[in-house]
Length: 468
Image (cartoon, rainbow, N blue to C red; front, side, top):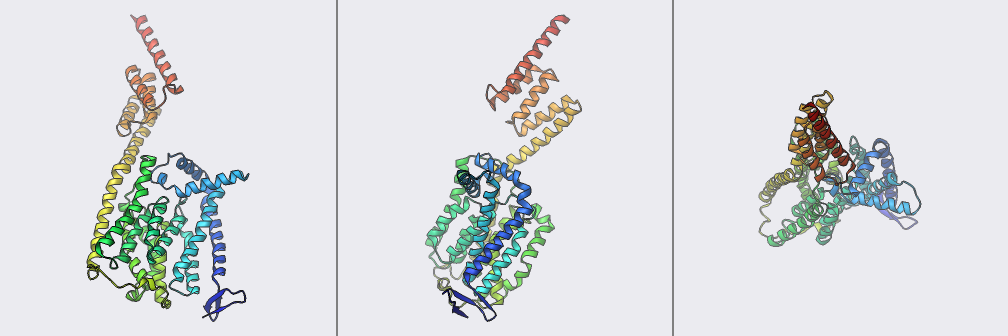
């Protein structure tokens, strides 16, 4: 039911409920503001110092992988801060991140509303978006540094819309920007493939798919070439942790359990894009169950619109004729081999994940693991030193260098230990020279240490001469 209001705005609703899109968007702005206040009280106010540190590291190109390569939000916040400085606003650091989060939350709500409004009447789209707001605070708990997630939701919703409407060129332009914010949009070409696999001839389909993959992977490897190699801040393969964690299953059930049955009910009669994008969910879940920590509910934001729309399609009538662009007759030689191709693609995807993990192991994780082992030996060395076990401290720190041979502090500690406590000038000089390879020649610490070693040698020579 619809009519024109006195202002000329279209009003859509049921006999007991009259709504306009403009009122819905005003409501979303208010709810986004409430979520922003909640996030600030729960998380931001206790994490400002940590955020300042990470922001400075990203801007100085010293942050750990993969955070150093997720630059969009950090650079946007830096731009807002500089604009505030130019306008005479002092220390707008905290405000810049609040502003970006608030805007991203509001626009992701608008895009979710538009995503649902394609298939359902306005009250249903409103209900789904309000449910998303109710669910959103669950993604804030116990994780303070999630600056890329609100924008990631926007990129996924835009990607879904472009895929549904078959705007392939626009999708190819969106993917590089999305990948500068977070790596997860690399999965969007799979949504495209599952939606379009029986609409194009084989050669053209594969050409477009791999072109989209190149558009996604290009920035991923390009940033690593531009910024250089950065060691990881955590392990990338959390499969064992996720399998053992009860929370991995509990949180997912609490968030999606009530939607699962209606999402599956009458599946074959639901709109094509929703059916095909549902086939993407196993890919998404496998990726996130193997690599990150699965119980972090923020990871599920990109699939919430799909599951929600599938569930609503079981409770309310889908708008007829609202999406004619989805109805295309199947073409090409693969149209009758859907199940075989689907499971073959899923198997290839799983194999690709383990190849990706091998790449991460070689480039990031091994270095992190070795530095962790080095740190364990460094810690044991300090404990032995405090107990005056100088030989044991030297052994622990030498072992630390086997795992982290370019560590300036460990070389420096050994130079001091050998010079002043173990009276081994030769080894002290070896570690002093190693320190010089990782620092400037006129480093005051090294100049002072060199003078102390020389003085210790002179005293020892005088003692030897006087004893003789």
